[in-house]
Amino acid sequence: RINGIMKVFTGLDAINYDYAKIESLVKTIVDSIIKRNPDKGGCNLYDYVYVLSKAISINYRVKESKEKLIKIYNKTLTYQQKDGGFSYSPNHSRTEMYGKKIPNGKGIGDVHGTTLHCMSLWIIDNACNLNLKLNTVES
Image (cartoon, rainbow, N blue to C red):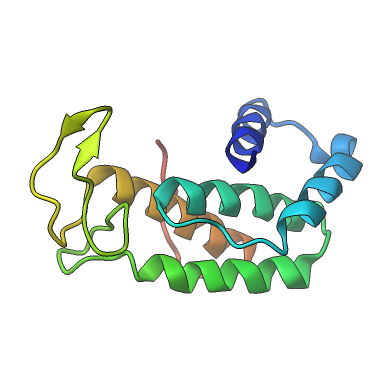
């Protein structure tokens, strides 16, 4: 569900949609997800961050949303590997993608994980005003 909402919000962001027009819908979505914790994995964390950040953009449940995003920020850092990249899963890089085996699965960053986690960190940085001076990530 959160993945689908993220995709809709991504489309709306692409056309610079004014979320004030659907404020009550965004509030309903935020109310339904804020008590939940995102599942493991790069996509689930990213989708949750993307959707939750919309609460802050409409000035709704800001304190709770920022607290949740800071927790996710700290969780995201646990996915960072010794090589500086991020893995899709906490303890290993992807071993399979679209049914194909990917070597080697050891504790190294992978492209998919690094992209998703960097985008999440950028969103959190901006939504929570952390002033980390991260560059915009585009995927």
